[in-house]
Amino acid sequence: SYELTQPPSVSVSPGQTASITCSGDKLGDKYVSWYQQKPGQSPVLFIYRDIERPSGIPARFSGSNSGNTATLTIRGTQAVDEADYYCQAWDRSTVVFGGGTKLTVL
Amino acid sequence: EVQLVESGGGVVRPGESLRLSCAASGFIFENYGLCWVRQVPGKGLEWVSGIYWNGDTVGYAESVKGRFTISRDNAKKSLYLQMNSLRAEDTALYHCAKSRIVGGSNDGFDIWGQGTLITVSS
Image 1 (cartoon, each protein chain N blue to C red):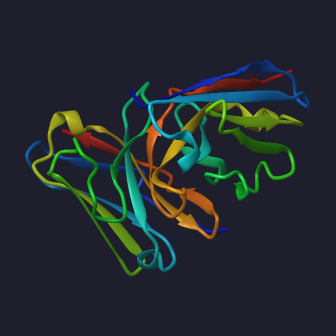
Image 2: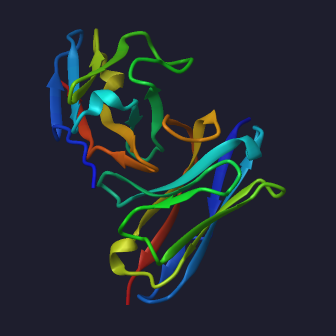
């Protein structure tokens, strides 16, 4: 079965750039979505189709996807961005989520 | 307001069955694919099952294949998950989620319900 691998945790200082990776075989051939989830809340779609942001998502969030790795980049990270982030892709007719990355803003 | 509201969760014993429902409002229900995603508290997201807009195409995670059945009633704007032969490892918060695009595949999920908790314990 297809797998997506994320680092369990990423730390960043306020105002700096955070990068969260998501790896999978030939992931660049698939569309990747990214979700933010805060404690006690449901996931929120932050990036779809690799690079697109839904309305209302701050421009400091961006995505990329090439080769075997997709990346969620947060520029000018703020304390409010501290959360769990999940990547997601489709493999044939099933959906796969990465294991999630806890972003800590120190 | 676009929203999804799950119901039907509870505490059951191993081997028992449960049926989850997800009531939709605020969008043209019959146009979109939907899915169930579960999350053990404190753990990651796991896709359970999905169904295309017309109900003709469904998919299941290997962990639930043969035990769970997804269905939808477009007239009632509702999504269902029939869960049979429940196991302790099925214990989780179950969310329903809506595909971002008409049809329902190869894209993200833009609307999520708050979830309904299933506990399987003897």
